[in-house]
Amino acid sequence: MAALALRLFFFFYFPAVTDDSHIYANFATNWMQHGVYGQTQGGQPEKQIVPADTRLPGYPAFLAVIFWLFGPGNFSAVMLAQILVDLGTCLIVSDLARRMVSERAARIAFVLAALCPFLANYAAAVLTETLEIFFTALALDCAAAALNRMPQIGVEPHAKPDVLDRTHRKLWAATGAAIAACILLRPDGGILLAAIALYLAGLVWRHRADRIADILVAGVIVVVIALAPLAPWTIRNFRTLHHFQPLAPRYANETNELVSRGFNRWVKTWIADYASVEEIYWNVPGDKIDPEKLPSRAIDGPTEDNPAQRDETLAVIADYNLSQDMTPELDARFGNLAADRIRAHPVRYYVGLPLLRVADMWLRPRTEILPPDVRWWEFNDDTKQSVIAVGFGLLNLAYVAAALLALIRVQARGQARTPSGIRWAGLLVCFLLLRSAFLGTLENPEPRYTLECYPVVILFSSRVLCDLRRVRRPTYKIS
Image (cartoon, rainbow, N blue to C red; front, side, top):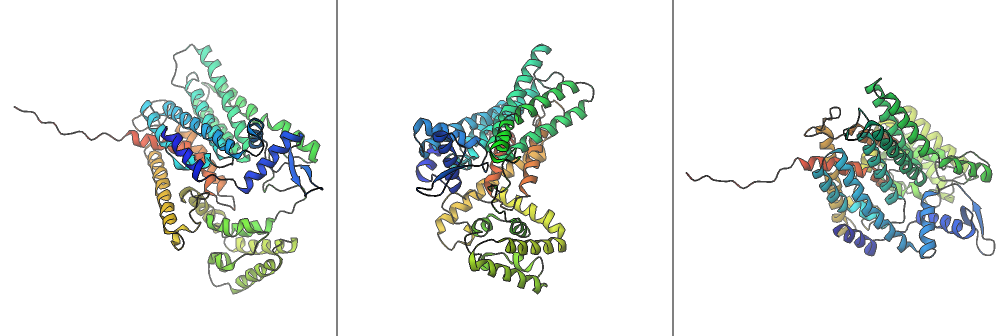
């Protein structure tokens, strides 16, 4: 009831319908009403529906079902459905903790998930996050169940070997289906597939000749089922749009739309925080670039001894601001700036800034769709909202710190349950590392991209809290 109340609080007071929400809704409505998976372009009477592949069909399909049941554009029904899905996520995370740690950890994990405001907040947002988190947790839970039941590998040898074989293969199939749902929602859902495949490869190396056949069969089942839904999507794109696209374009662009690759590369030479995403990255093209809002490293570079680079940067920005349109010529000039900066400081570009972006996504207060200002730390607008942002930041830090403590303490030794161990912890760590490494390559460090990792964060946090002991009252013996 507390979990439901928390999500309804965000539903009534902080519902979020963004520009992306309307794009997804447009895909869903056109698909449902006209049988065309595309976007509406032009106005009356020239309005037409143009087939597109800028968004994968998973979330539009979910919206289409809701709109068919409750009416087109009914975002309230979408949010309420996502609240129910998110409550299911809490139960799945609890079950994952039960399989990997203990019954007590399962109860703690349920509380941590149920009362997590970050998950609850996005349940009231018409975005892919809630469904993506649900299927990520489901895939990990099914994988843990399958690993537990694999003969000579798992820790549930209560049934006959042939029964275990059939059971774990069905569970691997369910794992693949959940990953397929992740991929159809967002292209980066494939990171979970890579993590499971890499972990299974590690099991092959570890067990050598013991159960190699079973592990290889498990890997084939997961990969085939996870990627199978992409076949009709790829064929559709080839036949309708006449190009090979198995996922979605990297920048969600139309076929003939100019992608500002030079500008994007220049942004990656200095961007490290979400504030710059809202103030600079999202506003180009269409709005002016305010040099005052750029960090000094964007103009001066790592050092302030390059006046030529500073002058060229300000000149390119000034030329762009004249029209607020990113022409190929301007994009090439931004690209040349980026090339010079990367050549001068490659370690900073390939290592330092990606680490800063990942840290920002993990540690920033998760208030991007809440009222607090993006520059909450300046305390110059609404002090109350800044205080709320600080509180969210401390709570997020507590979750992450508890998970890090569990990672430090974990001592998983084979199949044995150790006092501080987490069964199959390598799978979870592999997923965290792969996803964080991928996020470091993005030029838009948005904190919501790490929410898919929160089922793992909550599981690790529950492991730490399991070690807490109740304070006992002293007892005295009268002699």
